[in-house]
Image 1 (cartoon, one colour):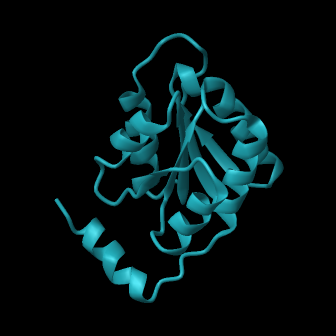
Image 2: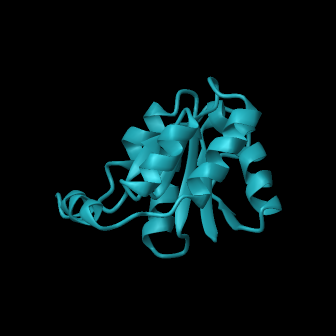
Image 3: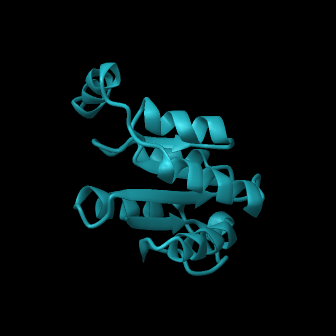
Length: 144
């Protein structure tokens, strides 16, 4: 799968870990930055990753900031993006099964690497169930 990844300075270290994990799992990864712990603005990096995803150059995205909340809010400003802040396996699984999330947001300052790895794997492996959930996704994607 083609995955775009991005982070701000607070999410840089976890982004690097997750990017390595994705590569080890055989995914093709586009890194939209940041590339250090120097302070940057999370909306800029969420925007880069979302534009890459929406262009069709990636199938999903992973965004990381300190809490995960900023990246989630910034990403969800884009029509067609369904970003979810996941802090556990239940959210990771059901955000895919029922909500067809296409952007996973992680809290770099609040989540260890082990849990992040399990969340990422669960999110990547869970399919969208479609059916009754599809009409709800269509309503989300058709909002201005």
